[in-house]
Length: 494
Ligand SMILES: *Cc1c(COP(=O)(O)O)cnc(C)c1O
Image (tube, rainbow, N blue to C red; front, side, top):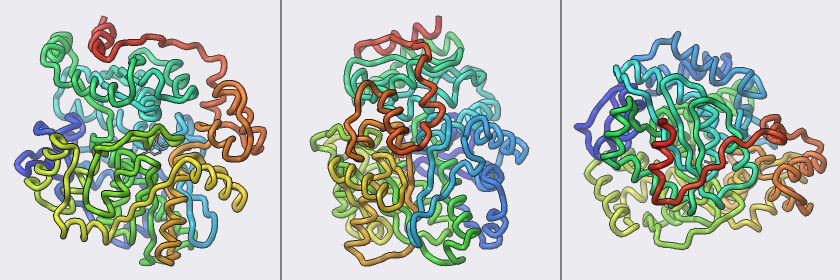
């Protein structure tokens, strides 16, 4: 399969080059030139398979240079019982006739990032071999919480990789911080940055483009790589779970063959909902994609007006993994909608220079036929957690609650009650404090006390990887100024 840059069709490569590079040399995103269609006969076969086998079949369509044997080994390692607490890996929980919840948080860090970050290290190290790269990958990550831990857990002790995560000192929850600072593994590093998430993210971008640092790294046998969702190796495993969920719904008779359904996704960087869009392009009968945002509602506005404008206040919310104003993966959607790299380049240039761009009207109309956007604030988020708990005896986290609010708004506005699959992106125990407040309980003590409190209140067991944080030794206490992040890189090479 041919991969191209969203900004230049003459930049082309195969899958392993796309995964090893992460980003195209012109700053565009490496993306398949076309998407394979899945015939009905294939779906019939996939229906009877395990999650791991579905993953092999679907990923193989995109990864020609990988053998079935290779992919089978990766899927077994990434989604096996040592990593996921259910054999279904990504189970679908049906709430009522037309509302189904896709649980993406059964992995080692209890957030949906595991679905891709457990697979990416296998794809990346194999891609290094296939592209005859001899140096070690030095993976830099800036995180607002979930990506950092997911990447650390995925890459720990993976041969030919080192990973360094930067998190904003006061910008992550206590549980998220503990998850990272207690990380085990011989090739990992974690450093707090004095600043907010944007500072950490900007700092990482600066390290990537620091010529002297890159040369120093090369002298010592390393090169920089990314585990961010701009890497195709993160989008692909996300395509798998939407197709898998559709197969489950068909198998269990919740949806009839050919019947349309919607997918509703709590969105930040636009990676997760992009995968759902690709599944639609592959021929799965997805009708609408409902994009849910918190108070940082730049995408809601964009999907309604075609104007993307990041010149606005940034809010810290109780769904922090969606606190983001620049959604990188939107660029892949723009490419798909316009099929015109020059047009995409123009929008991205305007975004860089003015923080704003306006889509051509017929592109807006095309987008609106498929996507719609809704947002809600923290108070509404909590109200929804309580409602869902009372109505269905089902506990959801703050991010998933934003999605349920969006679905409710969509149904009220359109009177359309077609079946909908809602992506559930984190375990409620990861955000115990806010979830407790939603249920009317005042959280007491630190993040881990709230975990116990929530378990007691609901009678649900706290996930083992979170409960196990108590008593774990903190390994990383390093802090840097945002201007000195290179020091952290160099000290990891010693
Ligand atoms: C990362 C994350 C999101 C946002 O996903 P994107 O792919 O960035 O849109 C939503 N919820 C949780 C819990 C996350 O960790």
